[in-house]
Structure formats: C-alpha cells, structure tokens
Image 1 (cartoon, one colour):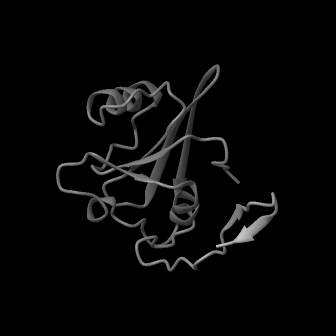
Image 2 (tube, one colour):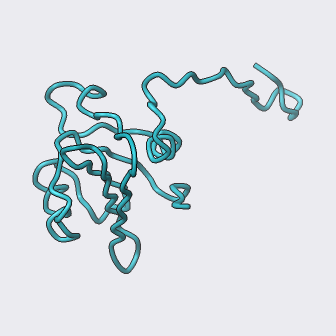
Length: 128
C-alpha cells in the first residue's frame, strides 16, 4: 500500500493527461501548467481522459517515483468539479488521496467531529 505519511502536500491535476507520459514530461507539466516545483517533495496526481487510470509523480531524495493505478471497473471522481474554474489543480489531504485511490467520492464523504485536546493551565490535557 502506498503511504502518504511523509508527503507535504498532495495536488490533483484538473486536466486529463496522456497516460503514455513519463517522469520527465509529467515533471514539465507540473512546472509549466501547474506552476509548482516538482522537486519540493509534493505529490502530484494525474487522471486519464476516461478517468480509469491515475498516475502519481513524487520526488524523493535521490529520484522520482512514478506510480500507476488502473481500475478494472468504475472510474475515479472528476477533479474538475472540486476546484475553482481558473485553478489548474486542487489540493487534497493524504486521507482524501487514500480514499480517492479506493474509489470513494471524497466530496460526499462525511467527516465526524473529533474531540480536541489542549494543554491546560495545570499542564494536563483538557478537552475542548
């Protein structure tokens, strides 16, 4: 299972990409179309036109990772409906990326309210 625990940010490109593209071409897409630096350690995800394939480009110290997932049935959710009309990509969390890879529509997922804690005056944790 691919882990996104050490990744700073995850970006999902809005426009579909040709899945024959490799590391160098997708790094140019990140630089020129998305306006980001592919060497910062951020994760960039690209969908195919039919949304059955997803490629992930990630820089790790020493080189790039390029991962591909192909769905046997169904499609990934269209990222164009997630972001503003002028934005070339949408920033998502690592949890949303895992859900997307599992085929879950993260726009309609319900998030439960979590109990929060802070350090109180006495140095102990207090619920808020």
